[in-house]
Amino acid sequence: MRTLYSGVSRGTESLVLRGGVPESQYEAMRAPFQEGDFPGPVKYGYLNVGVVEEGPLEGRVVFCLYPHQTRYVVPADAVTVVPDDVPPARAVLAGTVETAVNALWDAAPLVGDRVAVIGAGMVGCAVARLLAGIPGAEVQLVDVDPARAETAERLGVRFAAPEDAEGDRDLVFHTSATEAGLVRSLELLAAEGEVVEMSWYGDRAVSVPLGEAFHSGRLAVRASQVGMVAPARRTRRGFAGRMALALRLLADPAFDALIPGESAFADLPRLAAEGLPPLCHRIAYREDPACSV
Image (cartoon, rainbow, N blue to C red; front, side, top):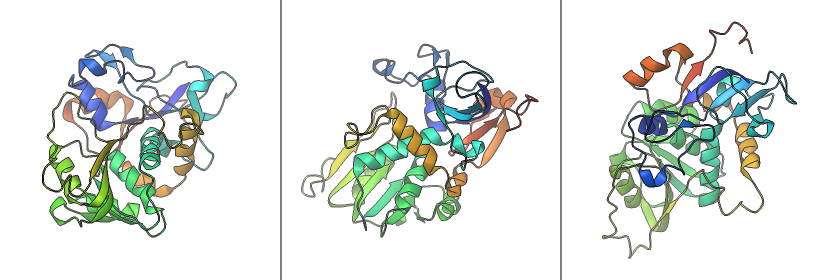
């Protein structure tokens, strides 16, 4: 396979880079084609779009859960064909949208639900866009960065700072990976509402306020993680079907709002040292003259 684009999953890859994967999670956090072992050095990443150069899918543009690399060899069943109506440059978001799909399968939001998404990073924005398609749903994207208001507008949802977010929510998806975000998530719930916790804190401890209205309001916190297909769909959908769905959903051009920047593959070391914005930073492999798709 010849890579066209890869995407940097800032939260997880930054955590891996700093050595924040706890020893108990070394096996669970292995990327499908990771090289090396935690805590490092490791070759890590899982948002890769390329062209098959040899094999049964020769000439097709495909997505693969592979690290940042110019060329590589994987089994044919490790890739998913990118639909013709999805630009390869947008298809790098497939792994992120797959995570959002799994979260909605876990939470099962209903028509007309009042929902907040706390954390306007890659995953939070993908969740917000999918929620925006539910008839009658009232969706607000919550973040401490006021610049995310423009992103929310492009995604077709309302924006709010944490202190201005509306309460009485049926569901809250938490993706900010901060203790303050989790606390605010619980504060925004209606009675018998649920927080879907999508953040992964690595080796950091967080405190959850289980006093106040937690018990009297019969509130709930549940985990959602892409490593397993959500129980609601596990008997009918596998990993391949979930990924294929994520790629079909990426025909929606609104997802371009999640990719505000792009750099060349050769710039990756500099980017790792300088840091990246909270959304997806796309890596282009145009230094290869053959990369013309």
